[in-house]
Image 1 (spheres, helix red, strand yellow):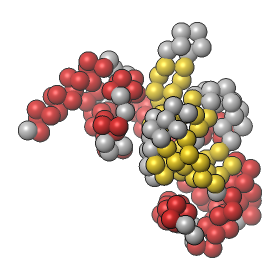
Image 2 (cartoon, rainbow, N blue to C red):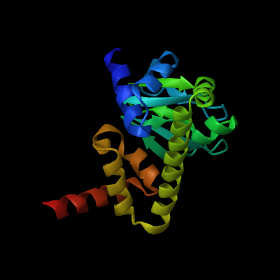
Image 3 (tube, helix red, strand yellow):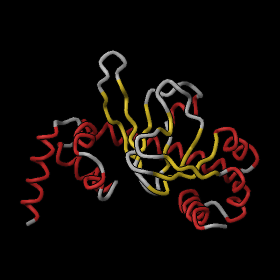
Image 4 (tube, rainbow, N blue to C red):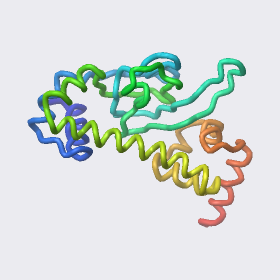
Length: 198
């Protein structure tokens, strides 16, 4: 097993308690894919057919208004996180979002059909599906709660906790879009936090 499949194996074991035997059953279905900066894992209005584990890079999920071309960042996915438009993946309906690589990236992915085949044959993989659904529900609920209850500064700190070094890796305007603030407001938050830590 090469190094990248070993990373996948360890992640699957930690994420859902899959055994070496369970993981070996799935190995033939996982494929490696390199995605260049600016290219897409999935496109708006297309069904999301794959579930990927990010080995290297950062992806953004964003919505583009077809009338105004305005873009709003919804989520970021970075190393050791699954990247997918989960609602589209499970419902088989077109995705509302683009999923774009923000750096030259690499994923290891499995198709919807192959993953569902594992669910049907192996109860442990069925458990993986439940944990996956719970994880993405928690992402969505946390995102809603952050906008309802947290300040801009608190949301920024949580983003840094979830994605270390993201500020150094992507343009500030993408972060401000995610936080729902202007780029100058983000700059003020960063200066305030830097002053407070010095």
